[in-house]
Length: 287
Image (tube, helix red, strand yellow):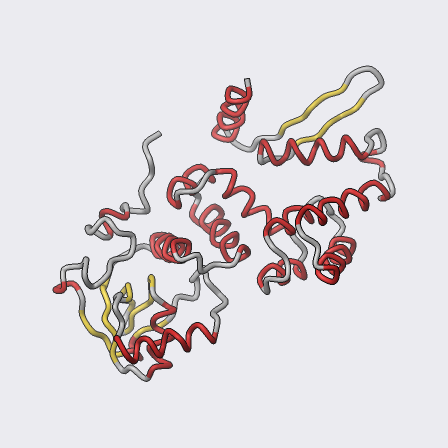
């Protein structure tokens, strides 16, 4: 399949072949100045958390050097919505600027989200939960497959799948990831614990003891070993549960081992023909 471009394609959106143009790389006739109060933030911006200290530092830089990179906006009625550059816009307000350089682009809502996501990913500005939520929105609201999304952002499909899985964490642990108390590695290990109360308890222990990811996995294995066996997995031992988790990581979908007396089954779920093709492709690689 040909590599899918970002909406119209980044090259079409930004002819300079850069995802977000700079003043130096953009024809200056495309850069205009707008009053800062005419510009509104994008409520669907993937990035929700802004570091106040870093914003202040950027504001000081803007006071000295101005805004080197224009803000990308879309005209909506009598105002303009930010497509990319909200952090620069916020810092400009702190710096006391009344006008900012912008490039106006006519983009769809999906393209706006895609460009904002790409900009933040390139700068590594998103925390893992913000990144997962942005992926999830593009998949569920705009109909992108994980494969299409992986091509747009330049990451593997497994990276996208692992990111979206983080949204299965309890609300408390999603907050712990946002606050930097838990890493993505800690979070992925915690996904083996489906009970929210227990998941939160283990997370508190991880944070209190400052465990690394390997120590966390060992702790979770201990909890799984001591966990009362329910009806669904009454024929499975801890080793089988761990094998299921490994297979889920490999195939990025639900996998169930059904153990009988002398034989068993491995059930691998898929949700579309594309998903089936992807799984079959994995078998070819593993062969």
